[in-house]
Length: 452
Image (cartoon, rainbow, N blue to C red; front, side, top):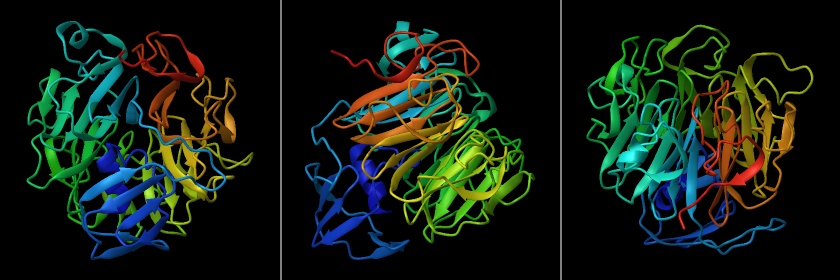
């Protein structure tokens, strides 16, 4: 398990959808400094074994964390070290979820199928929830959460993996296809799940020993078990029984990163999201071709995949967003292509539905792609070929998630902001996905409502 993953788990950050920590580290005895958050991690002991990720040396085995202190300044970057309300968030198709600084799972937005998972009779049965609602049942120790199209999943340290929402095709992983308005326990393998990622009709977990299990709709092979049969419980992905350090579930695809920095993807390939130079659906993990450097983080979107390489540059492949490669960009990219202005200095990336966003090493947020709904947050409705600065988020951004027509981010000290579509429209029927208590469309980052 990498240091970035352990820090993410300790802070309640989903490191699969949004790696919001820089991999640069300074090793001094048992104190390791990460420059992105910025954070100082004090371990109970000196790590005994390490793994090379690109040019960085990171600890392999889990080590108890004594303290996490956010009081280090990055040269040339403005930072805020206070403690805030939110640690991370995840933007789905028409709803959004987050983990609070105390480890509590909350969700808001479209609740037509119960994907918000709200406690309380009224909220649980409401079609829309306009502001954050506490997810029922799950304890205050959530370490990973992921919002998909019509369902949501989260991992609790004490209670394991839970899902809620629509359950056709076995999306909830509870061994049935019965729809649930409430939260249910996933029938997971004996190995501890450390992160979860939800796609359009499937979900995947990464276990503590680096194995990947997926379940749900498998018509295009997104489960990765070599078949097209839907799976109602977590099923081992072929060839990924160990050695995986990151994974992400997108529209109808899934991708994984190995310890060596190689990337494998599987599932629907019409938009060439698999990255193998074809349009053939892949039922098992297939190597992405054309990657010139090892990959340290990955984000699979609806029709494209973006990754961060060992030199902290962003590369993307697949269909939309077709932007980010200049005026000569075509609808699909046959092989991974670097994103201009993001060739280095990137610490997080998130690929959504038609747009993508990245956090730079100075904690600024930049987005590119489609913008008809204001999802780029630059105050306009203009599509952008190149990464564009999000208004008001020039510094202190620690997490980002690009959804379907909307985007959300966390800014230190823990303020959640969302922008883009917030009501009925082409990207979903739900209202309130921005969590500001309204159904108004927003073209700039708008604070998520929090409990008084």
